[in-house]
Length: 180
Image (cartoon, rainbow, N blue to C red; front, side):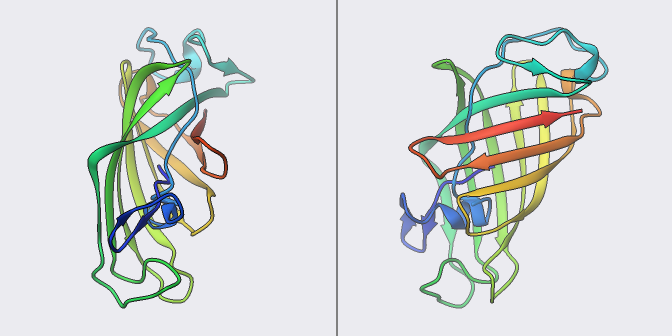
């Protein structure tokens, strides 16, 4: 969710990989545009909300993710490493999501580093929007871009599957969901 970079001493612009490694995980989630819609049994069953581009039973949602001061923590439990977080380190954070400059929700992420050699993290997160929530999970590398699996949802996103792509390589942290 997620690519807000962190270090043992706290978040920094160049260490979003722990959070994102815990989701770049510390990289942040971002991209833009959702409006409330009816609560169908499946996202593909509803008319596409503003900012959403449907394509053959595929719904795309994009948001810009912004870190919230004081709403992230990196706990350095593992071996000390100058190459990023190490096995056993923990990361948790919440970010605001916006679309077209409007606050549309939040993303909540927790991750643990699971590999000493590659510094990858296993991450889970929930994207909370006005019309439901979307759960994501997967492995996050130290790269500023990664993809997680959509494992389900509630409300308008009940039964959702697909992917969540995260990109913290530019000035913004973006999250793009491709929902089936």
